[in-house]
Length: 617
Figure 1: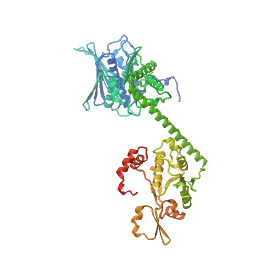
Figure 2: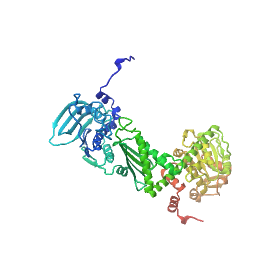
Figure 3: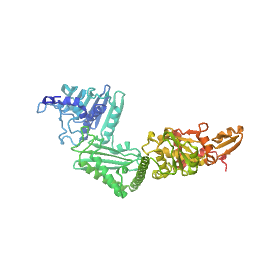
Figure 4: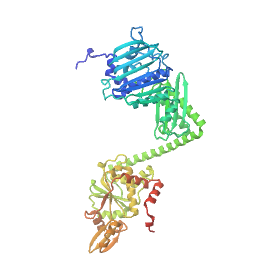
């Protein structure tokens, strides 16, 4: 394909904005439209920040039409020295505006002279009225092209600017345009906290909803509204001024388990943070490292912490046109020093509250250290399982593998080597493996993860099944099912519960897939003329008691069965009883409650569900 000088094109400013709106408003969807609203409102906030006007009006109409009005100085209009109209230049000509002069605009969000122009040129309809010097300058654009400009006299000495526009579907074409009034409310509410004494008066003419936001205490009100339940009664707050920069920081520890922060620069929220946020985080880490006398994970120190910072800077520097991140290097040092001073003042003036915070952080650090130990143990357990799989053969006298492994095979979990030997002679060696457990398995819910994963029987079970902690894959199991095969007594049931706990902790999906079963052993054997009948529960036996003829053998456990009885009762289609343990949300919750550390829930369950008059000594 030919490529030469004639292929190099230059877009005029209007075309560039309408065809590449994402460069100017962040995206060509409703978030881009919302950025338009944000750009115009922040212009009005800039006026209020400079001390001109204390009311900002936002009105939403049908057809995605929105109007923003303020009581500021009004945009200048009139013919400039170069012969162009000032109001037209403000809204249609690149890099035209007064915010390049910090004597006229100080500590404002806008600085590139692009935002309002991006709105004007990307709208189907755009109108602006500027009131000043007892005159009204009016500019109307149609799809970014000037349709009219007029100047008319005023009877009163009114000042301010009104901007009204309808975003163009041709420009914001990624989805149907729909201006969200709730989003606008949220933005204006946040801005009210940054503009003490300024009222944001909103009216949704579609629903007739009206709301006004006015904050008297700034960021403290913001934290009270957004922060949740505070753990420290006295909120931390500091306001500082240094070399023309103003910074306000508020902070509190809450009952939340997550860190929440908000960064504002010249009244605009920087959702990606920036240098002021870095300064606060550095101060927190350095301060509490000294207090805790040791290494402290910065993220753990900030767990549950809500904090916000608002800075006013004469010459703000942002990472992009949408101003999501502030870059001014001087903000880092200023906010670090201010945060340190705030923390020191809090410790000195409110020692009791500070000690509570310090105690909380100490516990969080200990909990994190324990969790880290557990994570390492899980990784070690996973490595052990994977290492054993590579060996193919396990050197353990407790495991007797089936001849054929895979989805159609079952691993029987039995209590002790004696029972394992008995079952080994009765089983079908081709599809049943045997793992002998030593007494009761460790309780997964009542022990720390570190101790649980160090347990030899847990590691052997996981290796025998090829269940890798954190990497469960049902297709890679050595056995398709596990069969609990224990004595039909209280101890046997307890072992079964402990096996359930272990599998539920490591691989709950194994249970969800219906892979955990209970292979029932006969509780009663009735012998009559060389024939044997098997009954697996007291209920079954009692129901047939009147018809039973012959010698009754009650089995205390698996050891009471001879190999032939074990083979016939548990491994033939005629008598075999295998119950699949189906996943039940309520049962699993009950399992955690009864097998966990909390004794209160156990006592409550016992007293509510057991009739002690039925219990015999």
